[in-house]
Image (tube, rainbow, N blue to C red):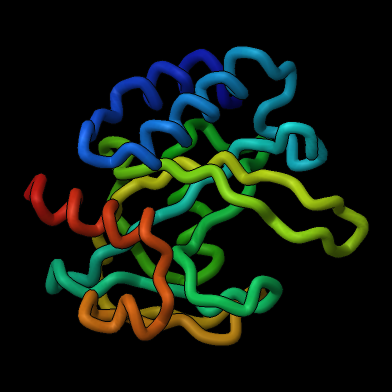
Length: 181
């Protein structure tokens, strides 16, 4: 079972002074982890809950795995809610990647980014915030599949990020991951 203090310590290990938006998101994430009795509960809508996403690089180290999210109708990284059986927050991100894409990925070593973003009201849930921690993974192969949560799953070249309206936090995380190799 995940421990909020352990995740807060991991979140504090992220440092990129050039990414003010990620640092501000991390402040909010750490505050949630330290002050909420149930930061991982998907039923906690105020101030939101912790989620985990994965930036999966293809075996070529260039293309990024994206899902066209069915509910949100946009291209995103695979990711989602933490579940009680997740041993670590990185394991939650890895599980979400596998569930949403079928990709076989390596284990994550560290946080690659953070983003707090709004989720529209739907299916009995009010508008709320996802306090998302992003982890870097590498795919063992290019084999992928589409889950019921998505319209499509693709390997995207960074030259197509703007055309697919990939969020700025994802683009910054991509550049950060490449610069750390």
